[in-house]
Image 1 (tube, helix red, strand yellow):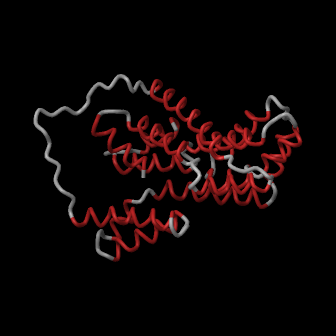
Image 2 (cartoon, rainbow, N blue to C red; image 1 turned 180 degrees about the horizontal axis):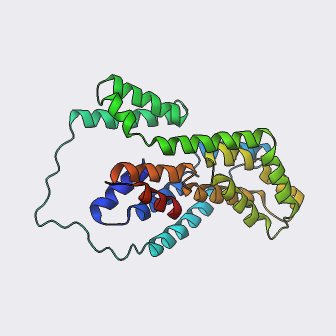
Image 3 (cartoon, rainbow, N blue to C red; image 1 turned 90 degrees about the vertical axis):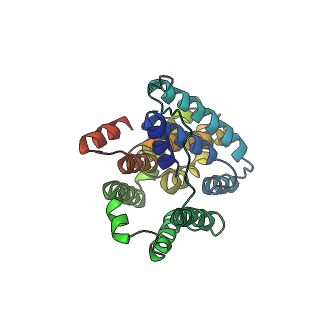
Length: 279
């Protein structure tokens, strides 16, 4: 939801849409480490299996500080302080009320959130259920909706996810973890585990692949290396896995690509390639 809101807002106000989308995603990256999220369930379960409890407050603080730093860096790199052409109007613009169709569409988003939070339905399945009900209700034409979907981005993310699943099944992830722990010491363990989580998240979902795979390893790695706190390793996996999600081959970056493609006129292949490289 956030990339779509950020891109449309940036285009109206005059900010760089990529900058605002990234900063928006950094905000949600911090918020994903509260105790009521799916990420918290994975991390808490991994910590509890090692006899550690109430680890989320520390991880939330680490994640918030890291994303705050990155937000400032992105703001400076994209020169957000040099807003040149904001929209100014001499007369107040009267915003029309929501139509019945728009309210129904927004209720579809609310339904998706309820399915996720209350009934613990997978986000993809919840989105399909909500979208299907809207189409069956005549809110929009199914043919037009299907044509408007960013199929290239969808296929890319699904393909990479399938590849990572194969790598995981044949033991590639465990092999990588063993190789990483063999070169770690108490000083390098935290940054190396964070970088490893980031590299894996470049081409996969942090929630679907990185956290379930690497969070349970943190306690064992801390014991093998010695002199390092398991919670510090978990926080590093959280930060690295989340921030690398802005890769165009991962979920966060793919959503930004999709938002730009559906909101920017003449979003040509050249523009898409440039945005891909920037992400």
